[in-house]
Image (cartoon, rainbow, N blue to C red; front, side):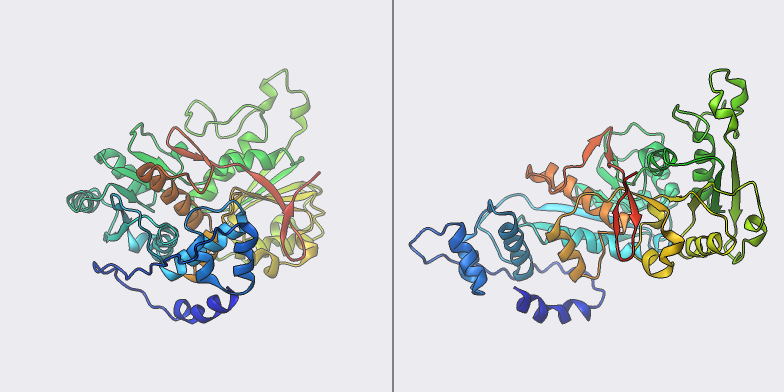
Length: 422
């Protein structure tokens, strides 16, 4: 198995971008000429002796042994083995505003393709690039997709594009790996959402916070929204609704006679621009933030800068909190362990499928840490199950057309993330 992967690795490493051809790839069929049954020990013996075709000849269906079945699925994908299964072709389109989403135009396509090649069902995958997320461009692309006979669409769009699609109200199944339904106002049964819930992650992290809460955010719309939510949620046990215009930006807890304990709580918000590299003015000899909890809503590079300066200026942080934004292996290499030893990171990439992880890896894709690629994989798995009635690879619950991810809290140790325990 290792030899086979080693020989095929250069093919994937040096592969270039391509357009999918209408000519189907050739299939390999393996005929079983062995008149005897082969049990689990027999199958393992074939694998141990690198007799992969003998193994595959007997392993036609899903195997009870999990590791053997993972090997079977991986080999079927790599060798492009055909099956004698016939049925309707699973047709899925990818709607790509390539100028808006950058690298995710290719990575979400790869994630979708990586999933489909692990299946024996016939499929057709086609990308539709759009110049912008304006309604006219989207409408034209959707009409072409439906005219081409596609039934499912993966759409890694920004909020602007998703809102325009909701207004168009197309009668075709569309999955947004980049959008959470809580951020949308739609009841369409055709629109499904797969983005993680930053608010749920923030609420879980705030349970570990102490006063004063010091929030560092960038000036992006996401950063500002998270900062506002965290500030308001810090002072209440109730769920904060950012869409409720009757709620003020800052909650005055002194108005509630039942929250005597909460009156002592303090929270401070700081917004950091892209060019800022020194936050001495916020940290040095600032008694208001000593021994506080620090909530960081910035990309990994900026986060590393902030954490190093927390140590430099002897802030003595009780802990440092962050959402999925900083669940990244770069955090382990970019920061000193002493800077991150009290850090807690929320993560919603909690289900792992080894076959899909390895298949994506061969295509240069990451579904272990990159939540958009992960969400794309979860979405295509959901659509594939709807179309073929096969069991889903992921058991993530779907409620009101939104993927309901669980949230776990992790600590970045010396070389890996481990589960957080109080």
